[in-house]
Length: 119
Image 1 (cartoon, rainbow, N blue to C red):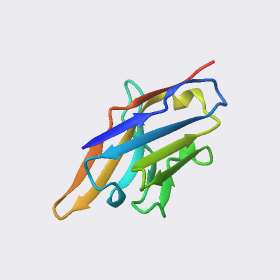
Image 2 (cartoon, rainbow, N blue to C red):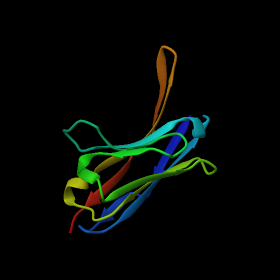
Image 3 (cartoon, rainbow, N blue to C red):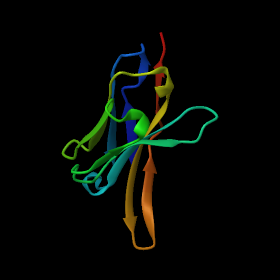
Image 4 (cartoon, rainbow, N blue to C red):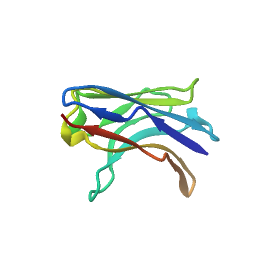
């Protein structure tokens, strides 16, 4: 199983970035996908999530109206479009794939991609 994120980088406040995460080694279309982020010294927090078919999404209050999560199951890819970026959005962003089964759940993580918002 692999989740490979890309698209991070340095951007000025007010700018935009699009993160991508490609999954392999599992049935991508049956997993809920999420983006989390973590700043040094802080707990990892949920940023956005999307259901397996893409029909349902939810967002952290801090990013509502600025970030958008989407997925392309044919490409086994989930995206995070980030607009009007703020310095507080600086963090390592992680892709997560999750699917429950009786008695537990599958839970896979990517290696993370750094997003830095600074002038």
